[in-house]
Length: 141
Image (tube, rainbow, N blue to C red; front, side, top):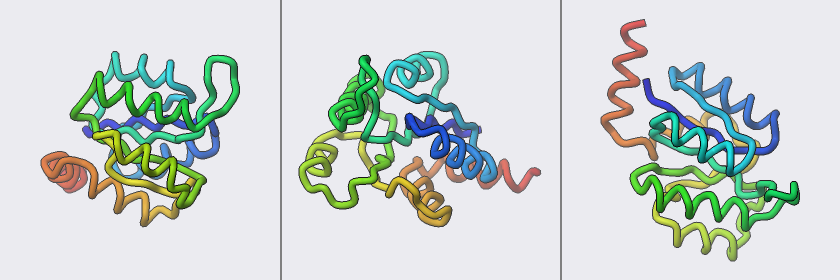
């Protein structure tokens, strides 16, 4: 089963994405900050990460730098792990430019995306072989 890591400090967003993704047959792991995300990646082989840009730092202060930092760390430690960036910024060009410099950033979603947009982004970002396995898994059910 394809594993997806959702990194967001907002519990409603985490649980909403978990519900959607699990209803489509994905195994979902949740993290509310960079430390939890890296711990999860050490223990589980995930095929995709969905990362909120506005995350709390070690002092509990939210900043976009923290989201960009975890994306950079993931691209260095797990270079084949693609990421979908979750952002409430819309088209903040400075942040988007920073994300485009990170090799594993493959798509962007608004903070409260509709299910069709989430599904489309996930299917576009996951490697094709993983999509094929998902369709086979769903067919067997």
